[in-house]
Length: 461
Image (cartoon, rainbow, N blue to C red; front, side):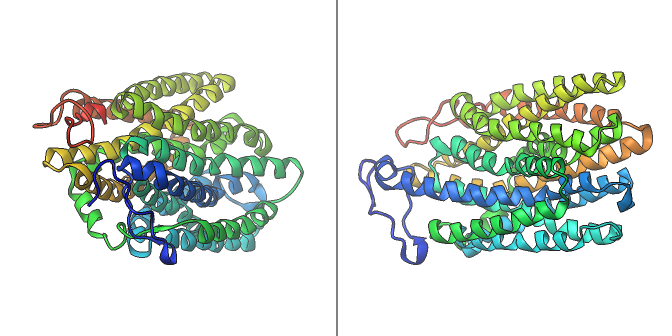
């Protein structure tokens, strides 16, 4: 047993397994923990980044697919919806995988699995291929969405509560930026007159690099392994599902719009693939870059407060989009859409920072203190992140299906934007009612994780 000022023994890394990990102990963190945690963070970002690129691959490939491919706009929205759906569903088993295999081991496996959809797409990507074949191969790309869940669960265990907002924001932001990177690569290839197989050929060796780097430089944490029961405990907690709804509003928007933005520009404003590609990368890029800022602001001012006002901003941006859509103003529409992307990224950081704080708060309310409270918080927050990430990604499915129906019914995306505005109002109301209107029953409205100091209120998570 180590006191608060005593450094535990340096991590033992036999077979790349670390058997002792106590990031809440400041001496341990400053002397050994931070260096190890940052190293794992950086290579986790690399693998997750490639995973996001593969997951959103078809948002780019459909831009290459002109009339010769024989697909209607509704077919393309259906294709991207199903890819998003698979990416959401596989996040649940990917969350369990960290506890079963270890964070490093699963990062290697999950990175290597990305070769399957990439090579398959390379094989079938040509005119004359049936829609059902494209759909089947597109479903394979959904496994790239799972990398987020396992990566966030793994990195959550490495960092102390006071650093989680920044660390999780950087981890997720670095992964999210895989979306605009693949879109920029597509823009360069389309502009140079190249085809989709050139893009796929670039990513195949990058996947191999990500898997090798994980094998060489990442670690497994012994105290995370064999704790699959944590997911069951997290699933029983109401806050897991409340935060899932809020995450639909932020990440669901980000990933849904990432898949749909280019298609909306093509179908509603008559943009060519090249014209659409010039714009579509900008929103995901800025939304990804600002995600760590959302986590940092949440560390400083409270995730619930930042999230609340972020939903206000998203609602305003959506209202502007509705007006621009009705007035057929391409410039205003594009500007408002980019702003909405930025706010979705900011909200991604702030909502995910709320999760560790909520479960740390619950630990303190149970009377747990010190490392016992920190371990409880890490255990449940890590498990809940995968579930929340999975449900949040389903928002991307809903967005693409909403656009599909809106274009079929009205010939534009206006009807879909009205539905999105209503949902942001719901997210605002839930955030205020659950986390800001009052503190949780029996939980004092003060802050910190220390045994000697009082507890958090939910308003401060």
